[in-house]
Amino acid sequence: MKPTPVARHARSGPPLAPLRHLRQLTAAVRRLQAGAGPAPALALVLGSGFAGVRDAVTVEWSAPFARLPGFVAPEVPGHAGAVLVGRLAGVRVCVLAGRAHYYEGHDLATVTYPVRVLARWGVRLLVLTNAAGGIHPRLRPGDFLALRDHINFMGAHPLRGPAPPGLERFVDLSAVYDAALRAHLHAAARETGVRLRAGVYLAVSGPSYETPAEIRAFARLGADAVGMSTVPEAIVARQCGLRVAGLSCITNRAAGLSDRPITHAEVLTVAGQIRERATRLLGAFVRRVGGA
Image (tube, rainbow, N blue to C red; front, top):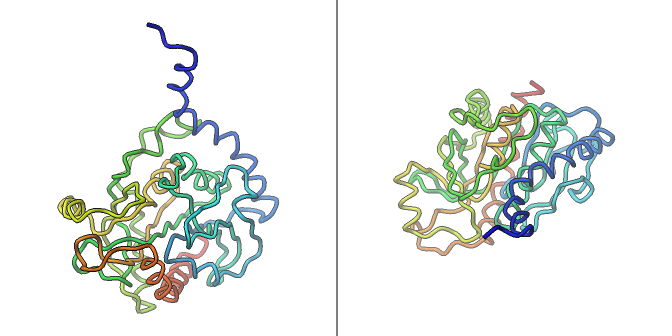
């Protein structure tokens, strides 16, 4: 039996999503250029736990995501949903205050679209931050983790579908997180007295927190922390040729490693307690990297 035209359309629909977003890239980049001028070399995506960094930016131009074609506003507390361009620690940067998440119902083309816009605009270095649950026994709430690798357990891949023109579909991920940028993070941590370790981040789709059995399995796989973001953006950033640094703040012990239930309120509470340290750490990092 031949499929109906409706069935054929439904079957071919999802892979076209990246191409749909490509049509919006030019408009979004033009909006950024008109408002903020040339792209800074460095951009930061602020996840939960890093919202305080935006208050340290001397803003030259800003816009809510709703004013930029193709951007979607986050619905999660702690994610403002705005683009800021200005100076952090004296260095011109672009800051995405918040991000959209896969668990909110968006496809990964939508989640990673802002990274493609930044790359097309001219950004070269990207810092991805997040809040994460600590799996490694030496990680405690309030610690920071510099990502040296990741495990994608989200059940989806952001490069699925047609590759954008001029970009590689089969992207090498043997060194997603730039070693030189990670060294700058460690140097900034020593300078500011912030406790920072390096490790592997495992991404799940969410929005539920993991079970103790899943955390035991993730530990056996080599994961040091677990969260619900960052990995799709890092993969797309590498496809676009950006150098990437990843930074997690540990806001809770993962399931089964503490006798307390995990709540988003707890995550935000710990995030609020460490916002000053997060700001110091990223400020020192930005000073070290400069506009390189």
